[in-house]
Image 1 (cartoon, helix red, strand yellow):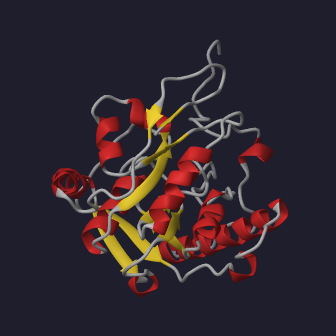
Image 2 (cartoon, rainbow, N blue to C red; image 1 turned 30 degrees about the vertical axis):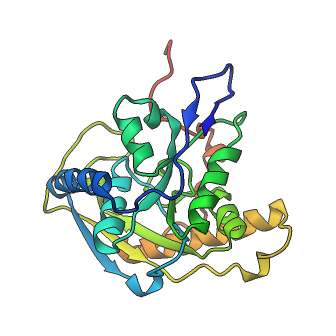
Length: 270
């Protein structure tokens, strides 16, 4: 089904992926095999631990910290080749408007989401819930964009991942990753690949939200639970970095930073 973006006008409609296609069909294998070669040249995906925390069957929401634009490639490689599952990412809709790439993303079951305060994502959320109920894996970066923390720690999160898990009745599992900043620094175009450079992934235990299931949840409860979820992700990143994160989590709004896009890029006319 097509979805429209309403923000200062109507953009061209975007199709949404349908549930029920082959999770590891010929096209999926072809694209995955091509991307795996690309990933292996760029960096090495190293799984540190926590495999026992991931269900072998059934749907779940996997949430991670977001440091660079190649995070998704590494995580997709890990889920497809190591876990033998097909990851379904909620990705920014602009990627789906790129010729060929957009078509491939849809064929692989990836879900476009729209950015902006005046844009609703009801349809992408519905499609994601359908995938979860069909026993598939949804991957989300709850920060909503690359971290704006100056030291690249996880920043404030959004409640979308929790709302999905609650609506679909599936587990939500945190994961931490670290290392891609050595390949492509955050908000930089200085690409520095190296097959010896590791992207390390650590999976945590299921984030329990039993007290929120089966009832109407308030905005305040979602915000509090999201903050706790980000703390769990941060703890995993602390293990990977062997450092302690700042006591106070970074919030772009309190620093006058834009919610999306490259906040380091100079504004026009300056």
